[in-house]
Length: 67
Image: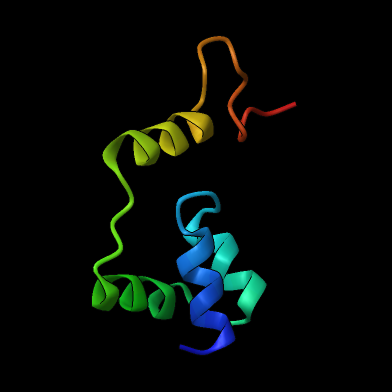
């Protein structure tokens, strides 16, 4: 296992895939493929937590609201 693969294996639960890919200089597709081949699965509660963190909350202005 090379350094990039070790990094993915050690951080996939803590860091989103997009950021892992950027940190190692690879594509998101490479990271997802490696995870699939190794059987690494992000638990549903972690995926849901990451999803909620990026969603618009009630009362937040839209990004395309004109000014």
